Image (cartoon, rainbow, N blue to C red):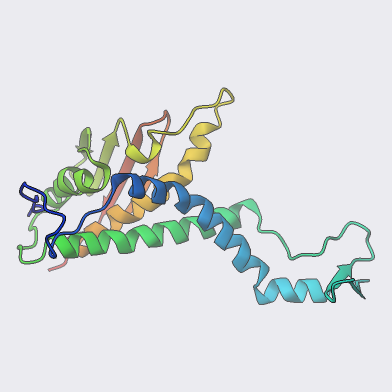
Length: 225
């Protein structure tokens, strides 16, 4: 199984040809994380629980504003007109599941598109090698630098120059690594979705200890028969 490489010359007028700018993909992956945070806060602000908390605020009064809208004031003197804010763990979970879910659907689609008419892998290691070489080359324009396994369903993929992290700046305070972590959740979903399309159930985690490198850990269960 391998991705079919287009043969030169590349003819943009070919109606069956499809092209994607690598810069557009880079910009998309950069914007996905702040978008996910915005959506998480917007959904939290519009949730029924937030409305109940706002309406049930003790000592709260409603006054008409000059533009016809209403402003809620609390009797404590510390309240603000708005809903309960997500705490750090809730925010992280909401963003993770959104980004990982988006990546999962992308991974499914990629493998279904490029591996149709090809037999399914019989060995999990071959499927992982396919991810390290063909899938990584398609999405990130390079192959994985190192693959390790304990031969018991755990695989560690190391990319020393991971493309989504390659343009991130490092700040002196050392928070760059922490800020880079959410940008690994979408690629985790891509890997999990690609493996699912090949009949492999897996969990995928990623971390970075030094930019722009990234390490992905895949824990698999046996192939479906």
